[in-house]
Image 1 (cartoon, rainbow, N blue to C red):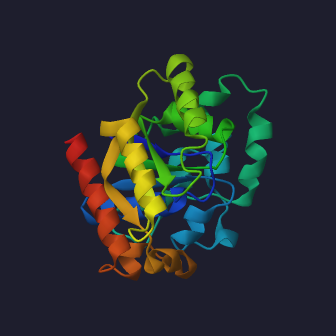
Image 2: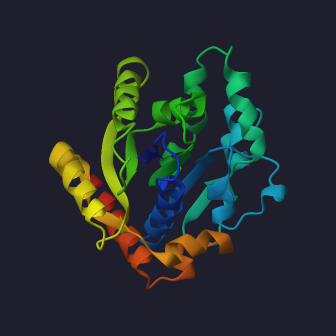
Image 3: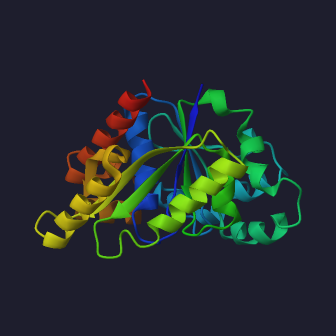
Length: 254
């Protein structure tokens, strides 16, 4: 039975897409069958994995409006064991189009029901908002990974996201679990980074992943070449961090 994991935080720039791409690639390298769903109109997960946005005719938009079957929307990638449902800028329109539909929060869940067992993990890269797209992702997901950057405003907005998760659990998806809080953009030289790590670990204890994603130039460079960190520089600190996270998730779910 596949597990669906949403990667969500309404704050932008916390490492959601970086985590989605590189966790997906790392799980694939560890011989798990992975589907990555780009549910962000900015489509950074799609371009970051090397897919030309102009070539996309069918993707998350068509999936959510049920104009194509889920299998029509899946593309292969150059990474081992990794498929993607790509996004395109047309996804911007979906929130308006779904607004007056019945069961609009369940569009993604219903669309994925046919293929859930085809994959070990399905990862959803969420938009940086708490709108209908993110709500669909949380309703479809079994668990959520919350990236938190090791910076001053890290905990700001986290309460709002946790409240949203609670209300999704109450109304739409009682099975939704928090897979873990992931500390990203950590710089051991900065006192502030260390303070944020201490604060998050003190307040959230067992909910925090042991793996911390460190600031890494290679990690920042990889998307501009349309490559995952595993393909771009498998010996980098960034690659080691994401492989460590992938192992942690596999162990937690075994």
